[in-house]
Amino acid sequence: MPKIDRATAPKSQGSLYPPPFAAPCQERETVRLGIAAGLTQFGVVLITLKPGGWSSQRHWHMNEDEFAYVLSGEVVLIEDEGETPLAPGDCAGWKAGVKNGHHLVNRGAVDAVLLVVGSRDNADWGEYSDIDMRFNAGRYERPAGAGGVFSRKDGTPL
Image (cartoon, rainbow, N blue to C red; front, side):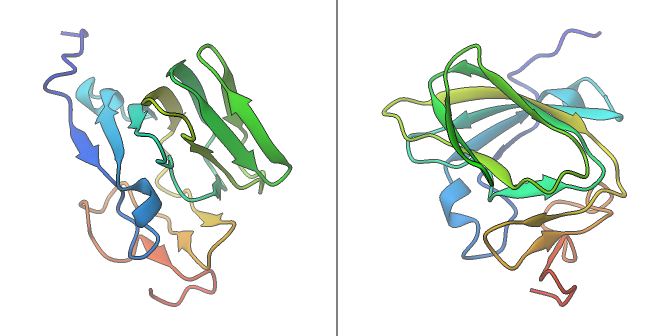
């Protein structure tokens, strides 16, 4: 059946980042709607950011497009060019291969809920703009918590 039951969709809390990089994302709640629907070509996630929470570390993707739509609450989009406030109904998108590190931060007093859509290219890789870390190709084939997903930018293990 195509209708997705959010109550039974795969959920996660926080991130898979190694310490100390996971700390700002610990309060991030993710519901994997695309996986619940059996989608394989693109991902669809519902993200809830508690006050003070980050969507991710600032990053960019080599092979994947990414799109975010604010459903409720407010966030600040932080990119290489600066900061942009986003309110319900606002959206932003990032083209694959553009090295513009970005993330969303909830600086408000209430939860922010985002719908995020992106490609699911297993050859994708990218870097984190503010820290010496990259994510490596093959992450969709690795089980959660498996090693090798992240490394330093020069490829050495973390």
